[in-house]
Amino acid sequence: MNKRLPFLLRTLPMVMLGTAIYAFGLQYFIVPNMLMEGGVTGIAILFNYALGWPLSISTIVLNIPLFIVGWLVLGRAQTGYSIFGTISLALFLALIEKMIAAGWIVPFRTSNDYILAALYAGVTLGTGLGIVFRFGGTTGGADIIARIASKMKGWSMGQIILTLDVVIIGLSLFYIPKEKVLYTLVAVYIASRMIDFIQDGAYAAKALSVFTDDGEHMAAVITREMDRGATIFAAKGGYSGKQKQVVYCVVARHEIRRLKTIVRSSDPHAFIVISDVHDVLGEGFKTE
Image 1 (cartoon, rainbow, N blue to C red):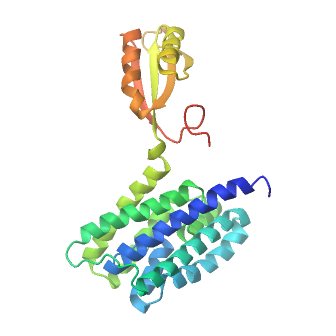
Image 2 (tube, rainbow, N blue to C red):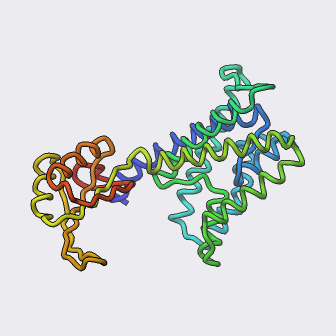
Image 3 (cartoon, one colour):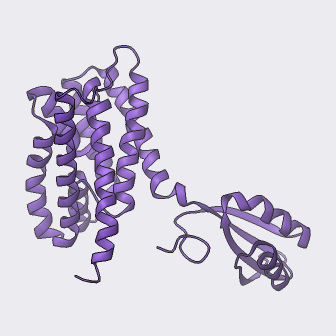
């Protein structure tokens, strides 16, 4: 427990921050404009539209059976993070509900500019979920279902979550106009892009693979001029059969132009391949 305490002290507050942003997006943009969301949260929103149930209550009620099954199938560690994330989300939903009722927050409602509501909803929801996922948390619901199905049947988690989202958003056609369902798809797409950016894009870097005859010289120049490490691999041309060396180096995105200039100056005939990399760990980048 002592070894895990620093990790929990770093992780849990960030999960709470993410669920707070996500809850705000739901209460400020989604519900006031009768848009939708996927997963179990989408079912809670449907209950809100059809029966008037508060999101904070239905979110907890709908997840309780999933927590029980998840605890038995997945174990307490994985399910514990989902329970914490769901309770945190429900608390922030309840808090924002109270603030709206007291007039401290005035939700964004529109009658003719739903694309604006969808765009900002997608950014807000995606930012919140991206932070939650980035720090290893979940908000329960579809994530638990997907993990259980993946463990028991070997199905892809992404495909399961996508299928659940399509079914739930499809059911919303019985309660909201089809135009708003289409706006919801815009919000879902924007949210997915924001989740990817928060998880990977903000830490993205570039990898340079340089095929050259003198890898030692190239690596030395890169190390001297860029203060970046480089790795040398032996290679052989598939057509020419000539021995080559591949110098592999990872740099920040803003450094790639300078690195290309250095490589070209060192070996004008070098063959260069540049690719995106994500979540770089180690000296010169993130340490955890």
